[in-house]
Length: 278
Image 1: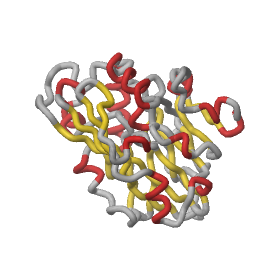
Image 2: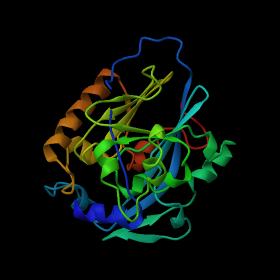
Image 3: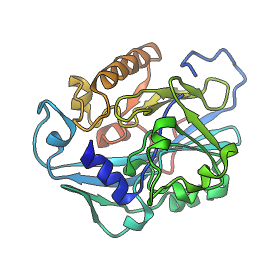
Image 4: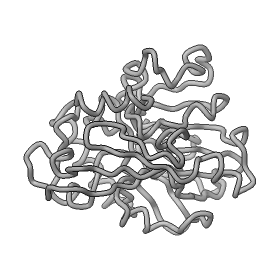
């Protein structure tokens, strides 16, 4: 855990959880769209050693995607995770021991392709407190922030990424011990999945074409999901495994398309930007 938290401090930190993932009975909910955004790439010198505490993943170098997501719910926009810091654009940087981060486009630049600005983002949801998921959160200081309570409290310090929300409690929703029905109609739910961090969150998005589950960092690769690998730096092995069990039950009951946010093959299941899943 120390190595990953050090990464968080070196680049910028953050968050996670929330109500109950029950099927919505409302038929008049606004249309929901989902865009996948490119929020960077992380090159690992030894991916398997980093993400398995039992050495059951293949050793050696591997690149991982760092994806973020834009969800439109009627006239409102939710940004899920904010990737690597904008300062890395065009400037590959060592962001930890054996880790190199790169960024080709900022979130703001991608929003502009959709004719949106930071002012159009109503809500920012952060899956958890690690730097590669909250690097550009400071670009959206006027949005409501949804994050896990313990993750929010664990990012206080000199490099605090959440300054605007620490002085504006009205724009802050801390999740702990339950799910968060983000728009109040069951269409987009932040799921309580602790273990990777104390109040880690995943996200359920109900589209007309089918349900989508975004993992956050519950899993980091398809192989890790298939064999239930737990990184050694997770805050709780037992909570991680319990969250994995709950996630798989939800994936089955909702017949959801699972998107592992760091798995390039998974993010390719969604339309390439600027097209949206609907």
